[in-house]
Image (cartoon, rainbow, N blue to C red; front, side):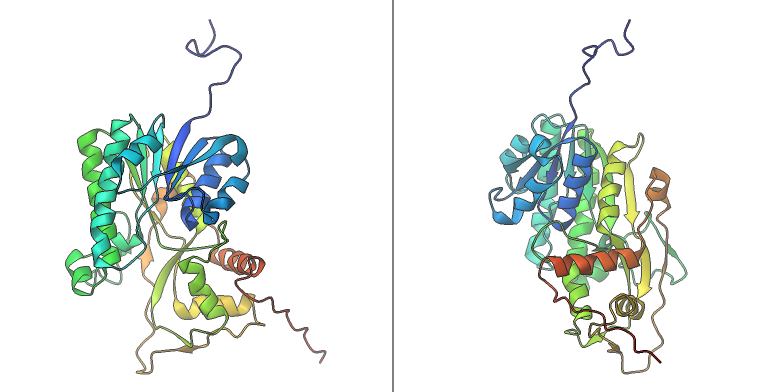
Length: 338
């Protein structure tokens, strides 16, 4: 008897079909790329699949044989059911990247639509892209506390400070968790922070625009603040590991490093000394330097993820921006002989 009696002996089973919402985005593109490299058949959704901003997806390795793009909108349940038809898994990356309070309902209702459409079409597993914005915005958390998957942002604080993006991410994640429990769907949630690294798409995304402003000195000062950073390829791998690993589920904090903005611009200056990198802090009151907080990414390490050093992410992000024409190429000046 063959070891797998249900298979056509001598013929490998067809690769699994999965769907990625928001496939043309910075993170979505790398999730698609990672899935194709691992042999999946991928269906990517976009509001307009024929738009030139999605053309880079069709150039990915394996795309010709294993990638298809379809029109879908997270506010249109019928389009989602069509996109998810025949899929074993869904990676829900699409979400409004805005601080507009009116888009909170879009993030929440769109997530509910995705979960219900997935259940309707017999999808087994969903991986949701949330954000560390749903975990770290809590003014009452002790500076010595470790940020991990048990942490949640303070919704009232976020609302009072008009941080509607954090509110939307929190409510969308809670909605996905509640719907998964009700519908019997397996759910894993990845919470990436500020995401760095090379772009597959042509358009400049927000986090790399952030780096370009410091690199070119167009942002005259940097704040006395800390932030969390991670490589976009690590975020993509985190999604796929959370999908593939048996027993994986719940939240996964996707943070590679937490550092002061002075350290970030210092890294950029060290890597690219020929550029007019921002050099001044905007804190003129002489306040103490903000302290980087502690965090744990152990849950993702336990899945097998190795995090990319931030210096590598920054270097490759800038080289990519140079190659795509977003940053002028300035040659390093040779050192003078002393």
